[in-house]
Image (cartoon, rainbow, N blue to C red):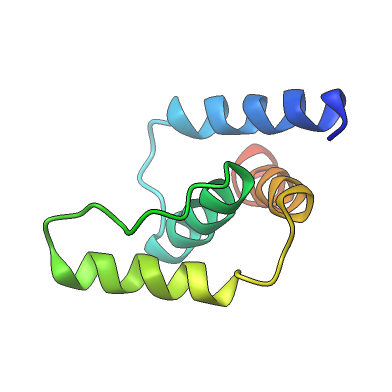
Length: 86
């Protein structure tokens, strides 16, 4: 994996982590799925709320056919489009 992509991905993750405004649930779920795939973390969602776990699992299922590289690229693109350029 190219170092520039990894740096850009980490920068986007840090940006989201420090973002103070509320984010729409659909955006959070997409970011969640891309993040999990990019980090090869396929553990079950860890929420104590079954409904939240179901939404997270569904987001992962929808994104299951993309590579780690695509997940990183999609995460960065989504952050740039929805958060940085708004």
